[in-house]
Image (cartoon, rainbow, N blue to C red; front, side, top):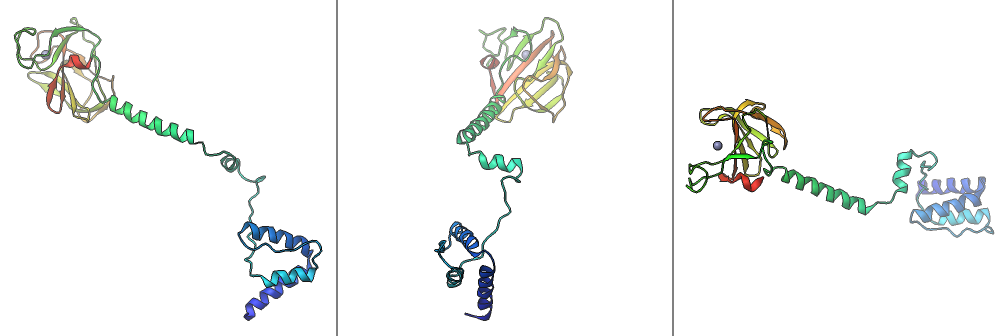
Length: 236
Ligand SMILES: [Zn+2]
């Protein structure tokens, strides 16, 4: 036992003999037990000197005092301490996140009509099948708007990649939906978006018109999936 240890032991002895040692030792035993240390066998019959001897024979670590007091703790800490982990809530968060992701994916698939009109003046006919409409090749679907200029809505969320004038399609908007799908809205009167804009499903992107190669106010609506023209009727 070196000098320092002796000094420490002497200090502990002094402390125990010069204070109300039993109560202190009892508290020390409890603290040592909590800390995983050795509990000292002090009893009410143990004399002060015996208690000191018990302590000096053992190599317990210093008592760790904590200032934590539930009375003084911030309410947020108390709530945290008193609230058990609710695993069902964790599951709900996971399910909710998955639903959000599913909805996000769903919103990127074209669906519904791009205008509030159901008058199809020319059907989808990519192979120029003479049995369809006028038999001319047509890679989209024309929806007449009864000579009225009305809003055109994005049928899925995405990014506008084209918003310009084309001699054939007239004023057109093309949206990339980020999943292989693109949609095109042609012969517009006015374009309400610009290339680079992100749009939500249902956003007004243009108004119907008669621009380009067109013989009446309508919306020429195309859907492509990975570069392959789709029949818009399959997505209404
Ligand atoms: Zn058309």
